[in-house]
Length: 193
Ligand SMILES: *[C@@H]1O[C@H](CO)[C@@H](O)[C@H](O)[C@H]1NC(C)=O
Ligand SMILES: *[C@@H]1O[C@H](CO)[C@@H](O)[C@H](O)[C@H]1NC(C)=O
Image 1 (tube, rainbow, N blue to C red):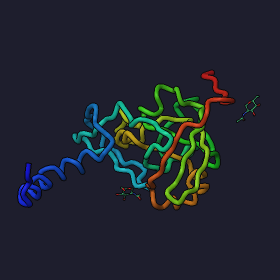
Image 2 (image 1 turned 90 degrees about the vertical axis):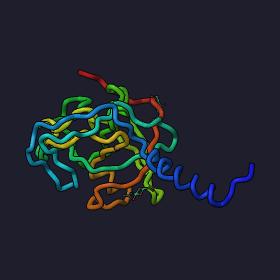
Image 3 (image 1 turned 30 degrees about the horizontal axis):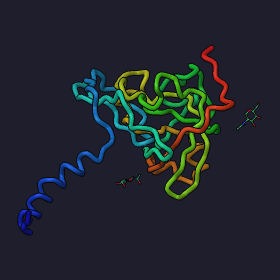
Image 4 (image 1 turned 90 degrees about the horizontal axis):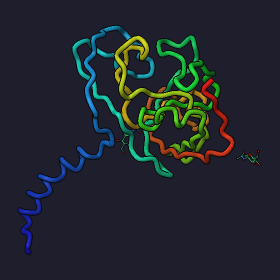
């Protein structure tokens, strides 16, 4: 079959928008309607929920590989931060000087990654090992427990200040592109107690 130049241009015009739309790895599994209009801590660039507005929820996260693409965000795990409860793995607060992260709900996987180490690699080539202590809840949000912020996206590694600094990244950027992978399971001790 001979495809004319015009047909080719037409095909490209039709296909390209779809291709770029499917580039987002996050497919909503539902929508959460906010009932709250409270202010939230916007120092890390977060959007606060607005009453009456709907926010996407994500049950699943992209498949984990040796180089899982993700968005690094900044989280405070200490008790005196604005909003947010204790960490979901152990119901405790943690020091932001520790190499610790929260993962989107799919990756958090019902506590299965609690206490496990992941390796995070920045675009500048630097990497760090960090322990999973919390969930970046992709299903719930827009309430006091979540500082009135919408559910987390499906592909977030929400990390302590120490992780950002070890990677040589600037916390003022708020977001960075990274990849991560599971580090072997050996020697990770964790108790639910
Ligand atoms: C991350 O990568 C995407 C796609 O390559 C790009 O559009 C975006 O600006 C990057 N984000 C940051 C914070 O560098
Ligand atoms: C894990 O523990 C074993 C035995 O206690 C030890 O020989 C090994 O070096 C440890 N591995 C790591 C990665 O720490």
